[in-house]
Length: 356
Image (cartoon, rainbow, N blue to C red; front, top):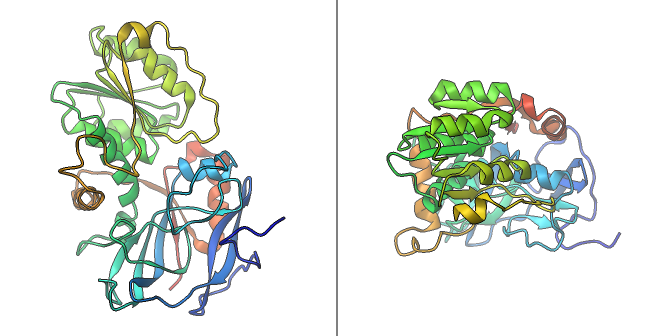
């Protein structure tokens, strides 16, 4: 195989190896369902860079698992300069690490000892540009295990900026993984009625515990949403499950001139949709909510930095749930992906913890 730019020459699995200050292990998807820890060089930081030692990172059970299963579009740009390889695999791809700055360039704006959230793949030690869109200093008192949810909360917050929930609205959220749960909890603050839809009983029970009005199995959703809304259908539906069937169900159940926000990344999955009669007759809107930019009309007031600051602020509240079902040492990171792939019903947030 021809060597791709950014992929280490020696893709060597090094179980139990520690960080020696110049080389560290990173997690790579080498082939479909093949996650490996790969040793690679860590250069010293330049003037506008920092070196960060990871403390915890969070696995995205949506986009990351799509890539892990080999369902990413090979021609699509990775979107983050901290990632490497190609969605066609191999690829080093993830984006939520909390760590401690150990070295900093004189123009980095950060200092050794600062705790930071970094949009960087899972890696023990890494050097990256100290750009505010890529790395942020943690607010004082915010625990790393809580702060590591900042990116996925940023995704949920972006959805609520794209599709604001008005007082009196009925909202249906499809999927109660981490992003779906966060979307639903934010919508709960203003929605008159909130329904969540998920095939996994434990996730439905968790949603009822934090305050959803109803938690439905997909097969029960049409009749129950009709009853809940007195026949009007939801004003807003949010598809955060990654299932094309859920997007179809949202089209089927959303009310006249209602809005459907598509948060999920489907990768190369085929998404066949039946649009008649509900979409056409009902004049529904389907909106793409993608976290890489601020939605149209909000740019004069909002920036990526402001959105991230808001996410950090929400993480300091006591009402927002950030659920963790499993924690793995980084040495066993490939096991975390195998679990998420084979038993998604048993997982919510999955943390990787790094030795110090």
